Length: 183
Image (tube, rainbow, N blue to C red; front, side, top):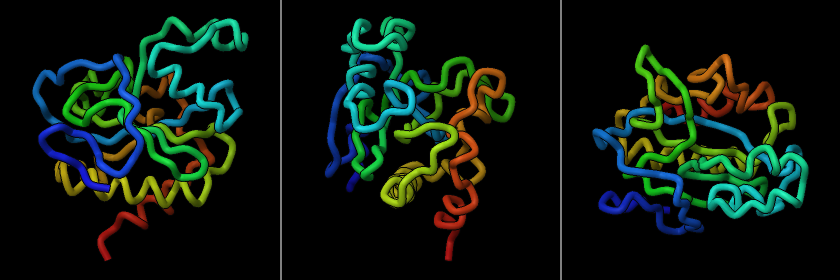
């Protein structure tokens, strides 16, 4: 994997561009937000997350899709259960992943953050392959954006605590942070 600083796209992973993004107001990238997603809820490997982020989800396929099909959301990256990484939005652009959010008394986290979705649920353990891919991707992003220090990596639950619970109690923050710590 290699991040092209000019384009904001990572080489060596799948690209699935989402229209649900726009220009960053300042160009700043200083926060990393970890999420989880599965579509339908609790089902993995369906390809529906990709459809959702591209506004191509068929609302007739599942009752839950009727609730979310009209939403226009995205994230920069998705890490599937097998560790495969897909990029939806250039790191240079603002993905629509955080919604109403606040970090360190600063609102509008989409303006200055990158969003990584883990295929999963709050309560199902994440896979070994996902942790390996997340750690590798995080290191790559920290090299490109040194402002993303350990203190500036958080869960969606941390920036939108009244609305969101992800990545949930199944996410092993201690393991993730220990793997990122300088040796």
